[in-house]
Amino acid sequence: MKKGILLHEADDDVGVATMDLAAGEVVQALTLEGEPVTEIELADDVPLAHKVAMRPMDANKDVLEYGRVIGSSSVAIAGGAHVHTHNLQSNRWAGRSQIVEHHKDQS
Image (tube, rainbow, N blue to C red):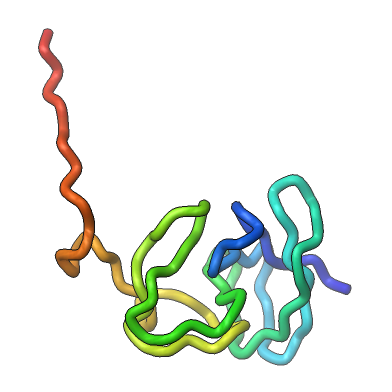
């Protein structure tokens, strides 16, 4: 079994392709510590370093990576699909993020 997806947290909605992956392949997803999490069949080709949906997601769902919300699905996303700008939107630019206070250097 090819080990081709890295998960920052075991329950993340998306993992990162550690090599170019092809639609129809079944690959193993691992945690940063090398622990196997699940096997997934790829719905799309996924280039190296791009995101892979670890489960089906409805449109407008908050998407987790690093154990944190990184954006929301702009359309329904199939498990094993390539997740990128065509189906993931930043909550920050959509007006859905929390305001972050920036501190100026006091020196």
